[in-house]
Image 1 (tube, one colour):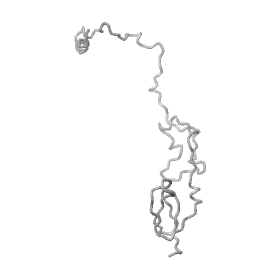
Image 2 (image 1 turned 90 degrees about the horizontal axis):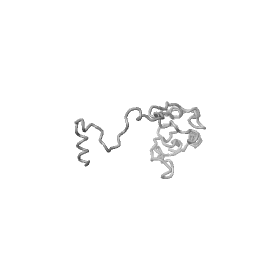
Image 3 (image 1 turned 45 degrees about the vertical axis):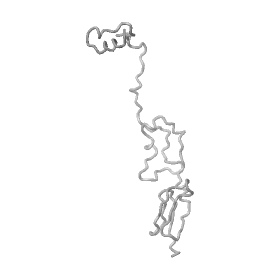
Image 4 (image 1 turned 180 degrees about the vertical axis):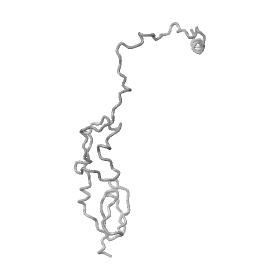
Length: 154
């Protein structure tokens, strides 16, 4: 039987065309079609979102609370489908640099406006200008280094 006849036969609506073609492998119907062993349908198994008990509740080993208004506590931040099968004992738990920045001395300057770039080139951050007109130390929004205008030198 040529391929054009098979194609024409599949488009026909006659009873002869709807009959199973001879010579093709036909799938058996009825009970023989069900497998002997029933497979578990994995599409219906859905993981429930939860925070594993071994996830530490503190933000950092050296700083227990959040340090920003927009920051979520660690157990609330580590949920959802991205964190379902993650072993948190293998994930980094970086130390907070807040204590280190707090120990950094305030840099006194004679200028009213200072520029902070965070260090040497690629190790730093974008250059920002900090206005020191108002009294008290002002922190860089990127790295936290504090600057203050030295009023003794006018």
